[in-house]
Length: 536
Image 1 (cartoon, rainbow, N blue to C red):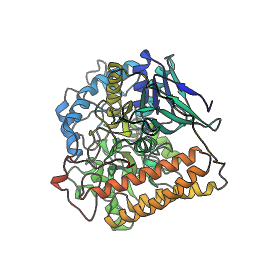
Image 2: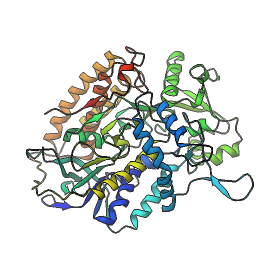
Image 3: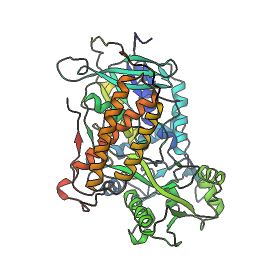
Image 4: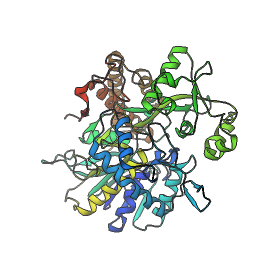
């Protein structure tokens, strides 16, 4: 198989809400391959607890949702993008429900039927977050995968890891750069296969695993951003890494996110003295935007020397808490924490990538034939800080728009001969400890030097160390046969470089990027993105 090219009409990398939605919408018009490096259900979508924000209540309005998004984005959102995505959200939500997604409902006050049970999260002025208890992402993923299974034109290739994008520029052709396909590692055979299509869609999610502590699954290694950057696409605003304020602090569980909806339903953040501290930092207290809450927790921990703070919802009736958060309640209980009787130990953790591959609202990148949708993309919706539960909304709307764009503007596959993957003299690695050591070092230095609070000195130190590590990784990449572990290491090193370089380009503090050397926002940097592109 290594010497043949597999031809499709559409190649989709990733099996979360963005990739699955796009695939479903284009399948009637051609053959679709969904390439996913683990199982089809392994995605950031599947881990999303809180919900999806959209205007579905008479008490809410598009204008209010727009205003809340712009406020959270700290002067860096693209307002026309914000308005487009939020205005189109309700219709896309309706489509999800028609596909079989079951959002939580509650009885109407008059007892005549039910309505959507909307919750409220930090930064929102109204209840507008649709949810399925505290496992919203899993419910959306279930409905989409059920629909995918009924579509004969879609092939799902599990345990297939995209190595690199194939472009005309890489093949030495003169003229505008165009994406032609991808080289893919078949993990079962160990062979690198060649896939070609006139449309390639990155829906690979984020990069939380570049940090030591994260709420993301193991797959979140920034593969799409790294591949796009290596292919010559523009990448922007990678300095804006959102740290979720409340990740469980427990020796046996390091990635359990405690949904923001716990605070939305009345949970308090307590310091080591058992007292609330958020009112000292912001008038919105626990419901301030995530960047403010995460920095406040970080400040409290540094001030007191504590390893964590506490999230307390014990003042709510136990029945209320268990019915609203059954998944979290059960998982905590298995770890010996009863959230109905005791506060939950929490710390901030890397959660969401607000920057990414530069696209318009239709997922169009600056490389012909290459699209990006969802967390991997930078549309301008999130600005300097994503408003809670806007991520699934963006993925849904932009995947729909990208599908419409490619169907209205079909492009034939160029008559270009794509050479098979060349492994050269690469041989099997006998020092896998090098991969695991470099992986750990990158994640730790990113946590220590490029975390919630930064300085120029820390950023320069991280830049120098990452450059040395990349030399080592690159040599290892060429000398040894590729494996999924080596590919992920290569990608997180690239993403770490991009985060640091973007952070060094922004001489201010804004939203999620807080630099002690520039503690205030600079008005001259409002509406300015930090754009990087690979040279040569």
